[in-house]
Length: 157
Image 1 (cartoon, rainbow, N blue to C red):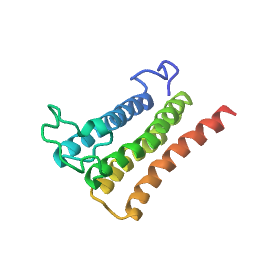
Image 2 (image 1 turned 90 degrees about the vertical axis):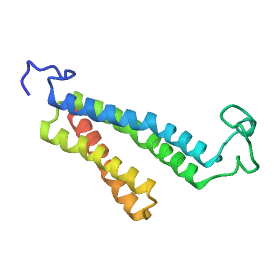
Image 3 (image 1 turned 60 degrees about the vertical axis):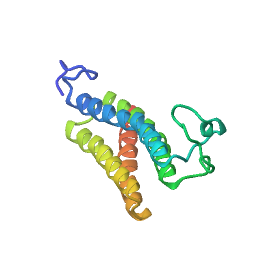
Image 4 (image 1 turned 180 degrees about the vertical axis):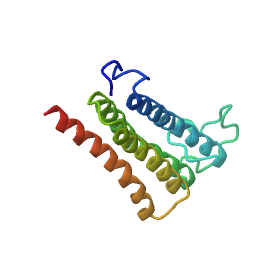
């Protein structure tokens, strides 16, 4: 990379790839709870707090059992928890990776491997695929973050 290109500039293809990927992952992180809300409204249940089952404009006809777990809703909640376990690590590792000035191709491969494998994990989870399928998708996202982190560590030592 030429010295004239600042690391934290969209002129830097590594930072550009990270910026796009990080934005996609942040949108995923922020939109997943909305999916949970939509599922709660559709199912009319899966609520968590006692006050959620009281009559209100959003719950005009409360019914017994609204506070009981609902697998349709819980699946979305588990997806959100999985995102909360994975995405922040990617955001930090990816940013440090950008600062380490890696080769563009390596950066693009690792960054997009993370995003694509997280998208595949989402599809596998939302369609209730076997754990083996989800684990395969998760593994690639995890390995890409580990690789970025190890690269940064080696460069920093």
